[in-house]
Length: 381
Ligand SMILES: Nc1ncnc2c1ncn2[C@@H]1O[C@H](COP(=O)(O)OP(=O)(O)OP(=O)(O)O)[C@@H](O)[C@H]1O
Image (tube, rainbow, N blue to C red; front, side, top):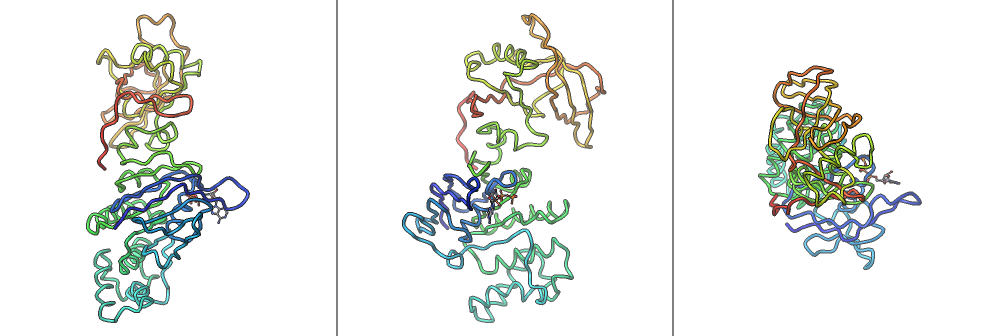
């Protein structure tokens, strides 16, 4: 199964802003690639173009060198000849057909002999662990079970590529969790290339081998999930991936920028002239009196303490720096969020000392792009 390659792909629906702009994206063979981004960023449009359900207004799409779409060359391969399986958010099962007949449907259309059909249906239902429901009707199944059937229906035709558009978003939290594990298992077993659309960063982080982050129709980053998390390519990715989100402090903000600038002058003097904003992940902020000399240290007052059971989310407002060379305390900063996995003894109004390792500072320039502080390691998703 070869790579899916999008080259300079754009799509406009009319007079409004383009849904997708100059997209260059390679979905590696056998990968589980999530298209991730906020509502309206062009995820579904991208998936539908790969499926052949939308025409690009510019660019080309190919699979392993076979051109499926080329605006320039006037090539268009229709959806049914792309050997791709699609599953949407709504399960779209035939209500008057049993589960087995639903799964068999696409095989009949392909005129597969009856014996082979029965075998395929059994295999697909077993793979999705829904074989016990073969003789039931969709209305007799829960949402999660129906979604398993629609996945089985897609698997039965053995497509080279699976295209999934938010298939879990109608399920409750528990089922979603189960289905994520199920899809991950399915991918590991079949090795099929999966392209999965979601706006849920946790979903992308937990399942994907590759994450393509989109914003306003433009690709922001394509990398392994942990790379996207640890080394976001820009401010948008840093803020979008992670919950609670990354804290962002503007150096131009006089209230907090002055103090942060002073700290950066001590920790990263060579980079300071290029830095416009600093990002800090909530779990990178520690409440601790002492620590390494190259920590960024600040005093803060505690706002809310929110225990979740396994962790504590705490809002703190910096009140001053502790750099002895600081001539004046800062006049309060923005509220920052930290996450601690140990009990935070502090309560609202308490004064605490917070520390962040210099390695955990994400530096962004005027354009919002990441400023590399160390060479990125080779990524092997
Ligand atoms: N058929 C259409 N006609 C006109 N505009 C459309 C059409 N489909 C999508 N759009 C517009 O294209 C842009 C991208 O939409 P798209 O559905 O691809 O985004 P998305 O990231 O999948 O969003 P969501 O997560 O809300 O489904 C949006 O501004 C949307 O309004």
